[in-house]
Structures are given as C-alpha cells and as structure tokens.
Length: 428
RNA sequence: GUGGCCUUAGCUCAACCGGCAGAGCAUCGGACUGUGGAUCCGAAGGUUACGGGUUCGACCCCCGUAGGCCACCCCA
Image (tube, rainbow, N blue to C red; front, side):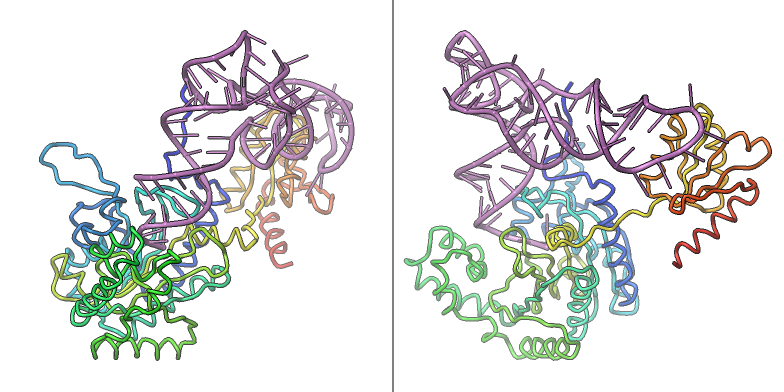
C-alpha cells in the first residue's frame, strides 16, 4: 500500500484551520460590503496568455512559478492555474463590457491561487487570497480608499503591528527616463556589484533597489530615487494619495525602494508588512495601480487599482501572536439512551429537534448510558436528552449537564423547552 | 530554481558507543448493567518517511527519493 499525502506545497485545512479561514473570509466579505465592492467568482484557470500578457512574460510569477496544465490535445489552447486574481478579473471586465457599467466597477474575489514555487512556511503552492479591484477611476482618492480598506482588514482580523509601505513607481511618461538613470548609475558601479545583482541589472534594474545583500546597502542608499524623477502628473497624484491617507488617519511609511514584482503596476504601489516577526514571509499583502492593464488585455484604456491579501499569512501571523483560536460552539444537547442498542429512538428524537433548527448530537455508539453521558459532558453540551422506558408514554428525561438537575418532559414540548433554554444560555 | 538543517505511534518527544523500538497526551474498553468531565486498571496503535548499501547486527553510519523547515531568488 502506498501512503498518500497532500501534494507538495499544499495542505489540508482541518476543521480548526478551516474555520479560521472562514472567519477571515467573513471579515473580508463584511468589509467589501461596507466599501461597496461586489463579490464575484472567476475561473481557477485561464488561458495562459491572460497571465503572460497581463502579468508580464519576464516576471518570476509567469516565468518559473506558473502552474501550467497539460494540453489534452495538440491544438487545444494552453491553460494555467491562476497565480493571482487581477488578470482574470480584468479579463472578465473586458469580456462582459463592464466599461458600460457606472464607473468605477468595484469587485472582490476570494479563493485559492496557485504558484509552482518552492514551499516554505507561509508560502504554498495553493494559497488563499482576498482580492479587491476598483476599475475605471484614475484616483487618487480611490487609491487611498483601497489602501485603507486593506489596512482595516488587518485591524479587524486582529493582526498586530501591520505597517503600510507606500511608494509611487511612476508611469509611462516618467519611468523610462528614471530606469535609464538608474541603469546608468549602477552601470557606473558595475565593478562593485555582486554577481547576482549584475545579472539583474539588465533584466529588471528596479529589483536592485530592494536587494537584501548587505554589500548593496551603500550603493542603494546613494542611488537615484524614483520619487525625485516623477513627472508632474505622477508627483501630484502621489501627493494627493498621501493627503487622503493622512486625512483617513492610516499610518504609512514612505518606502522609496518598494517595487512590485508584476509588470502591470503604475504609480501607487503599496504593501502590508508584518513588523517585528523575524524571518519568514513578512509581506502579508500588496497592491497597486495598473493604469495600462485593461488595454493590455484588449479593452479600452482604463485605469485601475487593487490589492491581494494573503490569508494564509494572516492565519500564520495570528498563530504567532498567540491570538486565541475560535472555539467551536458545543451542541445544545446530546441525545442518549438507556438501551445501548436502541439507536433508532435516539436518531428519531435528534431528527425531531434538528428539524426545529437546534444543534443536537445523537450519541450513536452502542454503549452503556454512563459512557454516553460522559461523551456528552466532554462535548460541553448544555443538556442531555435521556431516552428510557418513559418514551412509551411520550416522555424523555431532560438533564441540565451544568446544574446536574433533570426532569421529565413530554416529547411534544421538548423542542420548545430546549429552544427557550438555549436563548437564556446565550443571554446569560 | 540554488544552498543548508530536519523526518521515530494520531500529537509532543525518548531510546548509551551500532545490540530486544519506549513514555506522556489523545482514542477505545473495564472498574460503574438507567446517570456525566475526576481517579485507577487495561487494550489498541510502528515496515523508525520510502528505496538501496555497509555490518554478525542499523532508529543510529553511507547513497538516492519524497516531504517539512531555514536562507536566497521571488512573493501572498
């Protein structure tokens, strides 16, 4: 017999973890509702070209992390599992003519994403994201609104010490000139660059800015900054984003070296960062403006901005900060029986109560009454419904497991009495 | 994708120098046949991740594979 296991980089969310994820999704849905983002669902896979075009052929996400699906026939189109939601949402925006809806169109998606990366704590091949997109508004007020939305998510989920990192990476008008300047600068210092950085110089010079190599610190500090090179429009946009964030009271830190890994970003770039927790995956979420993406995917020129928040990393951060896990509510009552073999009566009575909307567990093990009550106690059930000979007269014993008291109740009154007791339990 | 550390029961971990694979928790049962969270007693649970090699003998040493973790790359 082979021993089977979940595929590398995936994991089973057992009930406790699953309910933790559920709770986070509930907070996300609640926030999305309050901020006017409507939930939608998109396929878990797309034509590979959607990602290649949208995210960028040269990005790591597409180049080495894309989960490509084997083609079923020679001429079928190539598909890949989604590594993020933005490209798919924008594809849907274009496909369904959402430019005719009142702008901006504010959308949100919750679900699993896939990247073929080498796994580590907080980095999985299947992971969950909350994604929000506002398409059709050039900002900057909507930029601030969406940054605040993400920030509120961490506040409401209870993740401590989350920092907002903020930067502007310019647009088509000013970034090319800056890149030239940056490349020239590092080119002049090529002899001082570590091997890895020298190779990145051609591919993506922006990446050198957030290098973790200590040998780069001095060079990076003296490098030209995008903030000093923004064109007038981008500088004004960035200033206005900050004014709005200040007014909202969202704490943020300007991070001139913050660049993002996907090609489609313009102007506003931001990241939510777990401060203090050493090592591991400190980036909890990130996002930015993508004013060219809709056009790239075949739509009319349309601005947009969005974020993706990693729910697995939030769960990890909550564990580490010692946040109490949500405790599953115990059953209101457990139905037990004096006759170990009579599971029919227990199931029937439980069914009756469940039909009235009550959370009731039927003890179906064929063991003696003492054992059944023990099991009910360990469940932290409030009541035990004890079935015995009284059932012939249409009665059962209703036992309060906390008080230790019990009395005879007519089967017809049982649901009503239990429901009433449940209410008083909840209020006090 | 690169480098390093790790893997013993469901969980947390023992096992001397290479010499009979063990405990706590959890599970199930008994003490207790119509009355419960305690206690005591007992049972079950293992191809020591998997596959090779060295050896009289391997949880222990060597090689490979898988999985986890850490640092990179990168990102959520």
